[in-house]
Amino acid sequence: MGPLDRWLRWLYTIQCTMTEMTSPAMLLVDRSGATAVYEQIADGLRRRIATGELAPGAPLPPVRTLASDLGVNLNTVARAYRLLEEEGFVRIHDREGVEVAAPAEAGAAQRARLRTQFATLLACMRQAGFTADEVRRACESEFGARAGASGGGAGGGS
Amino acid sequence: MIATELIVATLLEVLFVGGFMLLYPRIARRGLLFGVYVGESASDSPQARALRRGWDLGVLACVLASLATAYLVYRLAPPPAFAATPLFVLLLGGVVVYLWAYHRAHGLKQPGPPPLAVAPLALSPPSSPWLAVVTVAVGLVGGVVALAYTWRHYHALPALVPVHFGFSGAPDGWKPKTFASVMLLPLMTLVMGVGLGGLVYLVAHAKRGLRYPDDGRSLAAQLRFRSAVAVLLAGAALLVTVLLTFLSVFSVRIGLGLASKLSPVVPIAGGLLTVWALVGTLVIAVRFGQGGARLEQPAGAPLTNGLADNRHWILGVFYVNRDDPSLLVERRFGLGYTVNFGNPRAVALLVLFFGALLGLAIAALLS
Image (cartoon, rainbow over all chains, first blue to last red; front, top):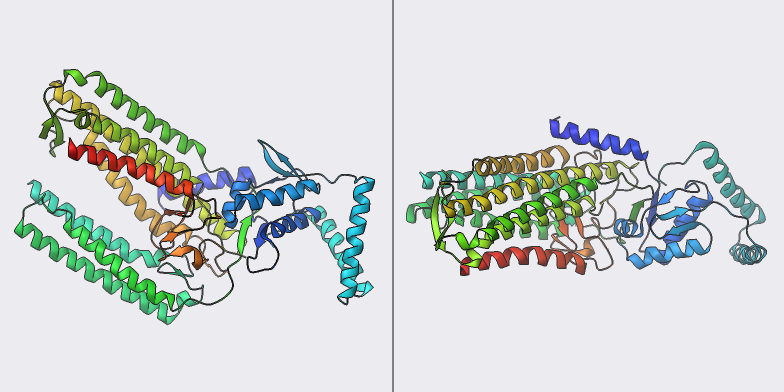
């Protein structure tokens, strides 16, 4: 190992230590899928925030970095972030970038809207042949994942 | 003496470039074969190995043809006339062999859906902004000093100004004093210093070519590779600025009769620049591999979008993706980064930099 290599490794180690970069969570987009790319981005982030894998206050990649990594249009990522902001999952600051928002007590109107959406989803699942037990297990699995994540720290890339 | 030195330099140049061409397939990311994403397992298949052997033989044939050309050219016309012909023959032959290998590699491509796109959600380590800032600042200062010094003494310069210097540092070529012949070097100092400094910034922010799932190994390898290339470029940019600034200032001083030859800083900076560029490139190629290929071993997970998506690559060399906001992306074949030709901003920067250099070169020829 040459001096340049040692120096670069040292520099990189310092950088990683300062930013606590271990194995980061990864966001996946499947361009062969029927779902729009911005919905896939929003859904991927929503799930990680809901399970606690991305903690409140955690900074998210800037629009340009995320779009560059995914090879998608800037507007696609911006649209996903705006959608998540409307839903209360993230906060967008002009200069500081995007960060995960803390869970907030939803108002009556929002609760009613979510209940309606949940009822629609349940109806779709029932129509697709899901049993009540399967739906219950899916709910428990989602809430269990969140409890596990908040108890044991963020997991690796999945 | 100069002819002998030129012949030795040409031979070394041909051997070095030929050696690098032989190295390229061995430092590529696993899954990529001569600019085509064929998949991780297919890139290790017997057909892929046979293709690499074909490339080796083709490159060796090009090197021999280049050396034969050098022998013929130097017998017919002494250097420096046609001094670049052997290298031109080697590069032209390399393009032909590459196109052959590229079309053969296409046959090994696996059909399938577009590859997954993957992005890390954690913020990456900061990419050394000071390196780019310092490089641009030094380039700017060097360029402004050279311009100001030359401008200040422009009217005092004689009718003939030195424009070429021998190995001893003494001038051996003169031209009539015109605005272009005098201001060319300081302008070149400014363009090269600032342009290369800007390139350091772009490299430090280049698109990452990741694998998934690999526990972040390819991301870590990518970041180390990117830092190494940025350091190499920054060092080269600083040495170019020092070299051109001293060259500009001493051209004026010799023209004014204040000095008889160039400052010793010029050959020292030139020598350091050559060693830094050659050794640095070799270290990055052998130790890191293209895009950190040698750091991410074992690279079993598939490459993701960008590098893996054949639809966005023309001849395996030109990346064209209108949606992708990236300015620079990792090359599929070779070492370093290339421009996203689908991004108008990237194309504009490329045209601006090379347009400036071309304009200066034309001005020099016309002066």
